[in-house]
Length: 376
Ligand code: RNT
Ligand code: ZN
Image 1 (cartoon, rainbow, N blue to C red):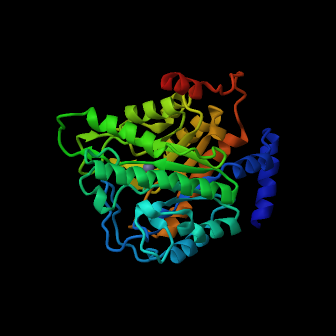
Image 2 (image 1 turned 135 degrees about the vertical axis):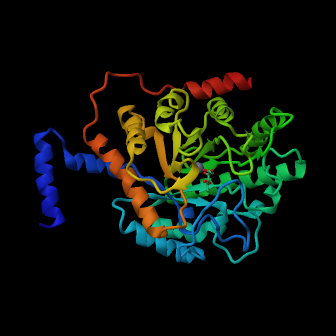
Image 3 (image 1 turned 90 degrees about the horizontal axis):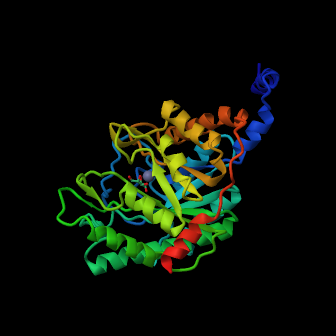
């Protein structure tokens, strides 16, 4: 029996249960997964040579075959994409700029990503983006955009500002909105004297970084929280409360990373709460094992629960599903394929048979109003 035949039989069986498999697959096709490029090279990037991964995140393992340049990374991605049905998106970090020029993060422009744009265009894929606020000498203090040092702060504000312009360009070139995720590792290893000032600085610095008007058709801001990082165990500036408050008050998307909460907390239960107050959501689907260990996503209970929250809650269309894990101890291409396919597999049974929920009001544009009132 070939796969086509197997599908026809399955289709018939499911039809008897009232499930239209063609329609379900079509719907799944409209739910792209943003595949994180950084699984392919252990979050090294190609902009700087010999720079250690910092920011309290870590890849472990030394499996051979790490991509050494953008060309190799794209070839590996192409190989992975052949084993992943449907068209998805690729999520880039600033350090994946593909240029022979010696440029720093604050000098990056859309042209430094031209090869990525061409590559994505050929494949009819969208691109998502991230400023890289770690693995850089200016991040050595453990603080970036919330640093008390005005020069350090200005550097990261400028990097984030430029990132939004790069993002808008991706969106315009590829005809699909680029979601740009801001994540800052800023925090203290030990108990700080002042918990308030860094948060005030982060809030105002973010506003400054986001001062340019960008076309919302092409770009969306998202902000990611975290409970702690390695070397920042006692205090993280961008905590859950800080981030949620910022996203709601500014009308931007909140990013929920599955590994960024206490081990017994799950994002599957946070999604429906956050979505009462924000129009769009970005997910970093990952698999924390004891800590934010960024294991490859498997089809476990929490992945099913995440998909349930999205589909049963009727919010999958307002959600951008991204993956975020990096495992260097296994084949990196397999890691992409396994994680992405599992994310799709978790959504499919739910999409095939959506619940007939009671009618609920559609999303109202309350958030920008709240923000306007607050601003005035
Ligand atoms: C770190 C965050 C962040 C990064 C990527 C590389 O804990 O999850 O999203 O993993 O930006
Ligand atoms: Zn993340």
